[in-house]
Amino acid sequence: LAVRLAKLTDEADARREHLIHAIELDPSHEEAGTLLLAQLEGEGRWHDVASLLDHLSEFAPDAEHKRQMLLREADVLT
Image (tube, rainbow, N blue to C red; front, top):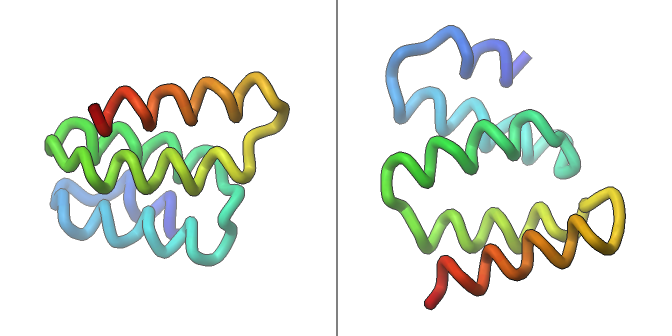
């Protein structure tokens, strides 16, 4: 439901909060993570992007995806 609400709103703050809520309810929610990551990148919130990548890496489907996320996190932080 939170992801649907995020998709329906035009307000960035509300969309971000809905997506965060979706991830709090289900930390492995891939769609919410992907949407939130795109929004944070678009807003230039690089510290938040790095934190989210670190979180999402914990729920990566396999070692290669985890490695890619951690490399991306390192890239964001440098």
